[in-house]
Image 1 (cartoon, rainbow, N blue to C red):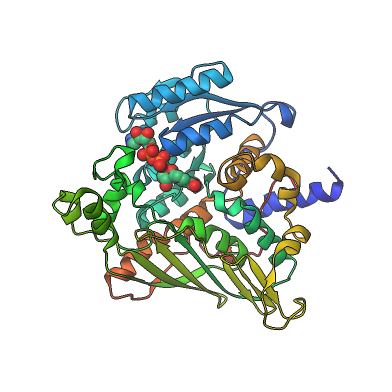
Image 2 (cartoon, rainbow, N blue to C red):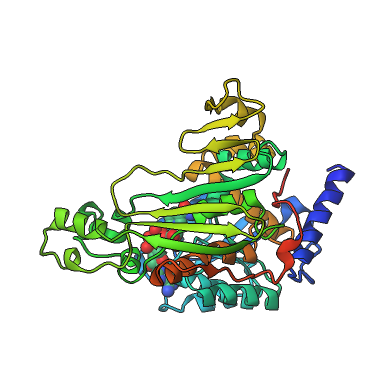
Length: 444
Ligand SMILES: NC(=O)c1ccc[n+]([C@@H]2O[C@H](COP(=O)([O-])OP(=O)(O)OC[C@H]3O[C@@H](n4cnc5c(N)ncnc54)[C@H](O)[C@@H]3O)[C@@H](O)[C@H]2O)c1
């Protein structure tokens, strides 16, 4: 590493710690010797579909040990224990003692970090238990589903000095990081507007598709759709947008307004598949099929955010980025720049931009990352998290990001419930957002 790189890293690490007010006292220095030899000992809570997939990815990294796993479902736990044993040669201890079994796992003294891929409502409780027991936390998305949970995460991280990273894999997509690189190099000029959305027909994940063995029965996601109306899954689209806009790094989300359509999709599909008399075809679902949220930042940028999850449609995160010099459309995968594009007012194919501005992290690790889930995003998020744990650093997506991106759910629900009234974002950083600093990317 060059002296310049070293001092830049030190600066960023210090800036990250100082500017967010998180004390990392006691976290510096090496516990295990040379960096490449440091093991990371991870406990994992919730080994269903996502958790099992992630375990396989995590074990691809050298030095990862998994001494303990927890799930309330014995079959899921046993399956995961077997996978770890077959891969790493040692069977992790299993915790299956009821809904709060994760507490015992978090109390172990042979773990550096605890990760969770449980249903949404458990992410915060598991993270609190992890941090309170001196462990790094890594949570699947969203990190929290209520305003109170968001504050609990922030306050517990500050009190314990332990970082908590929401595993927002979309931030590490190749396209997202290319755009980040272009923005940092000023190619878009001054940013004005972004549009993004979780546009994904997930009715089958809510349990309405016969082929996954649930005869119209609702899974945990489906139960959220009965009582909640707003943007229930904001972090995939807003994580990248927040990085691009420097949210908590010089700007902040100021307020939002939110509006939902009527709810038809769940009833419609269940009736089509299981008959109109199926009890779940007759439920009154709260969740509007398409929710639209508008956010304004302190610096005058606007964001349109969609949550479009229960009508037939192809997957599309949109990712429109617009500045004083030009625009990108993720849906089209095309750019237009006033002073660069060959034809005025005409979209340009993206290929050469993606090559020219590919993010250094992708240049370095892209080939390997692409062999893993979510177009490489899963590999890179774990690469970054494990680096932070190994080196006792703040995580690149920190607890303030995790809370700020997740809080859109409860705030949008409040706005929808009150005729789209404007709702202010809390300032989880308590003023530290004013300090401009780049997004932290390790290893470049
Ligand atoms: N980032 C991504 O791309 C991505 C993709 C899929 C899912 N996810 C997230 O991953 C999480 C899990 O989703 P999934 O599809 O794997 O769900 P799932 O239902 O398949 O798995 C959840 C697991 O948690 C276990 N569990 C429930 N309560 C528990 C408790 N009290 N203690 C321990 N274990 C408990 C369940 O038994 C199950 O094994 C969700 O938060 C989801 O949003 C993220």
